[in-house]
Length: 450
Image (cartoon, rainbow, N blue to C red):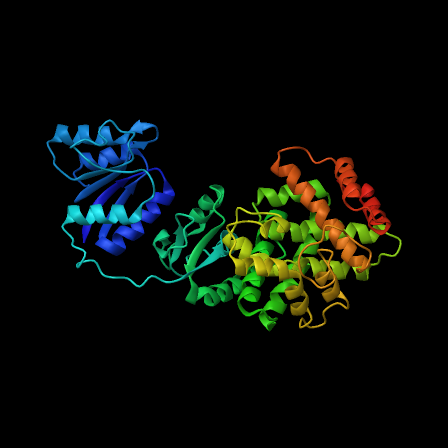
C-alpha cells in the first residue's frame, strides 16, 4: 500500500479523501490540519509517496511553504495542490486541481502519479443510498455501517462519497457536520432497516433514563421521532416497535413541555439543538394546542392528550421528503418546489390522508384522532391544502390548524432574525382566519406563556 501526507484544515475533505483514496488506489494518508505540523512531518522525511495539500491552510500559502521546504532539503516528491490560491498553483512544481470537491479527479490524478491503471483499480458496485438524519446518527458512538455524504444536488451515485467506515468513532464528526449545516448523511439502502432497528434500541434505552436534562431530552426525543418516521416511511404500517417507541416519545414530549414552560424558551431550546422542522413543529404545536384546550370553555385533559397524539403523527409521512430536501420548510411550499419529484409531491398532497389511515391501526388510538389528522389542512378528505378555512371540520382540527399557524409564525420570526411579538402574531392569525369559531380559538393565545 502506498502512503501519503494530506495537509488540510477542512474536516469534510479530509474524511472524503481518506476513504476514497484508500478504497480506489490503496493510498493511506497521514492527515495534518496544521501547516506547522505538516512541515515537521516533511522535515522528518515521513511524508511517504505523495503530498496532497489545500492551496491555503489557516490563511497561509501551504503550497508555497511545502515546496520551499522540499527545495531546501533537495527532495523530489509529487505534490498535488487543491485550489489556486497558492503562488505555486498552476506551475510546473506541482499538480494543481480545482478547489471544488471532485473525487473522480483526485482519484485519477493520484492513480497516474502512483502508476496505477484503471484495470488495477477494483470495480466497486455502488449501492443506492438512503438519507439518514444526523440527529439519528447521533444515537451511535460508532458508525453502524459505511456512511456517505452527497457532494452535489445531482441524483448520480457518483456524487455520494464515503466518510465513515463501519465501526469508526463518529460522535465528534457528526457534531461537526451538524454545525456546518449538514442535515443528512447517507447509508446503503439495503441496510436502512437494520440501522433504524439498531438506533431504536439505543434511543428507547436513553428515553428511559430519568437523569436526562432538558437539552438531552430534546435531542433524544427527536432521534425517536426520526426513527418512527423512517419505519413508517418504509412499511407504512404500525408495528409493535413503532408503538413502543412512539409512546416513549410522546411521554418524553410531555416532559419537555413541563421542563420548558414558555413558548419562546421552548423554541430557542429546540433551535439551539438544531432540531428538524417537522420535529420542532410537532413539539411546539403540542405545547400551543395543550394551552388552547386548557383555556377554551369546552376543553379537557382528554382533548389535550388526543392532540398530543395527533401532533406526533400528523406530518409523519412528510419525514422522508424533508429528509431528502432539508433546505425546505413549510409544507404548503413543497408542492410548488421544482426540486421535488412528482411522486414526492403526491406524498405531500396526500400526507394527511396517509397518516389518518395509519393511526387507525394504532392500538387504542384516541377516538377521533384519525379525523383530526385527516382535516389538519382544512380539507375534509385529507388531500391538499385549503386557502378558505371553513366550519365543516372538527373543533379539535381547528385547534391543530391554529396551533400549526402560530408555530409557523414563530419560526418565520426566527428565520428573519426578529423578536416574535405575541400581539403581532395573534393579529396576523385573526387576519388569516376570519370565521368566528377560529377567532375564539385564537383569542385563547392571548394568555399563552411567552
